[in-house]
Image: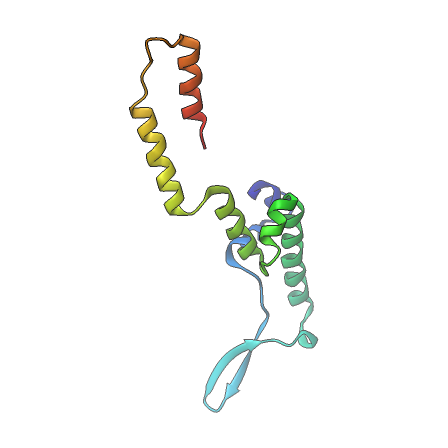
Length: 133
């Protein structure tokens, strides 16, 4: 997916990782200055281009997934939220990944050929363990 997004524009991947671009302006409140979102009516051309890139990334991500995944990410508002949801759905949480690694390590360490097993059956069983994701 990373290569797919990077093919057109290197800034697209930054949008996925960093989150959406929100144009901000400075507002003075007495002696303090704070940043607030810039109203849409005051966007300049550079702001509009960056926002268009955010929409482009979101569209690319959504069109590259199937219906089942779309249903998972449809509540997400930003490309970062979509990406994080897709990563979790694909890879699982850290806890799930660690549990899976522990289970596969245990299967591998306890792997033995049974007396009634052929070499082909043993190889198939070993391949199944090593190819597990």
